[in-house]
Amino acid sequence: MNEVRHNWSKQEILDIYNKPLMELLYDAATIHRQQHDPNVVQVSTLLSIKTGGCSEDCGYCPQAARYHTGVQGSDLMTVNQVKAQALRAKESGSSRVCMGAAWRNVKDGEEFDQVLDMVRTINKLDMEVCCTLGMITENQAQRLAEAGLYAYNHNLDSSEEYYKEVISTRGYQDRLDTIGNVRKTNVTVCSGGIIGMGESIEDRAGMLVALSTLDPQPESTPINALVAVEGTPLEDEKPVEIWDMIRMVATTRIVLPETQVRLSAGRTQMSREGQAMCFFAGANSIFAGDKLLTTPNPDVNEDMKMFKLLGLNPQKPFTKKVQPQTIEAEDSKYQNLGEKPKWSRPGHTIERNETAKQKAKLIK
Ligand code: SAM
Ligand code: DTB
Ligand code: SF4
Image (cartoon, rainbow, N blue to C red; front, side, top):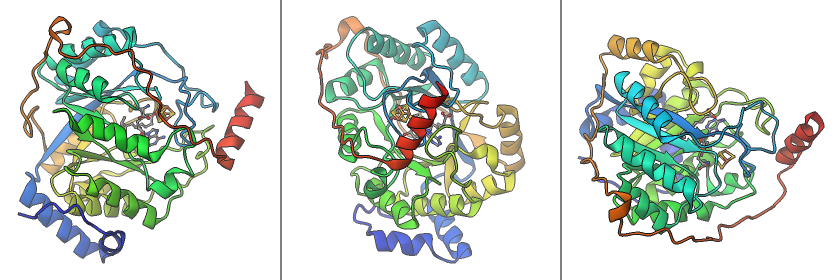
């Protein structure tokens, strides 16, 4: 077994990323089969429970209100709507539902209480429940844990240096603090990032330094290829080369040996052969369903055909960790504190974000 290391240097990670491809694949696949069943892939279904209208300026995101992307905004879904979608996801072979909200951070109140109800409802369907709701405090993380949350997704997205080129409305430390708050509970951490935003290979390595130094490391690590959406500041970025995706997945597998590496956004642009190489390189999770949050994803039947072709089996729920117990709202140990946390807002100017915002103003 490979020991999990929390002291990877950027240079060591770069040396891995840049290895001759056959050696990189061999090393990654070797570690993969020491730690995981190479024929099992975890399948998550994304559900956008609150879409669009977000206050942040994330340069990649079609849900930021300030850019003109054509995303139709919506209010928070009802618990019944979410339950119906979760049942559909379960029938199609998903073990996890990941609920995403276009929020900067969670605010105590009715809407958060409704999300807690959604978590309780899905956990009772014996599925893993994940949420990605933006920044959260320790109390909010504890309340999610009590409701039966299995995982919380909060991506570092890039290196600390490149993060500043993409987002000005919040800081890297806030991301780390939120992950720290989740870690104080028994909810697992899901954190990864995006490639193809114009970052350097050093930035990719820098992100992996940040993720691998977390102790414990995240239980799952999504690697997204940027979906360049028209109207966002990153609309003109070139599509990620499959070779970059394979190298990033393999390097992630080596420096985070126990994590479930998720082949996340960008699969509609990848061939089955390309995806097969990613699975060989250590990816062992995907998002399934014909939509990610707002952009297309491969058809679930096509994914199941690909699984059959490759001899892959969907992972059963609670394979890696036991099912959390749901505590009903009335028995809760943690109360709504009505907190008003002060998450940072660096507010520096990012030229391309400004340009996209001005363009949107002209259209609106
Ligand atoms: N609002 C919350 C937040 O930002 O943490 C949760 C939802 S947000 C959409 C979740 C993640 O989706 C982002 O951190 C980013 O990694 C990913 N994402 C968003 N837009 C993307 C895009 N166009 N291409 C690839 N990944 C994207
Ligand atoms: C993650 O790393 N990728 C997912 C999930 N976590 C929330 C989101 C991808 C979003 C892609 C753009 C969209 O569909 O809006
Ligand atoms: Fe809002 Fe999250 Fe999109 Fe940033 S990534 S604009 S916080 S929904």
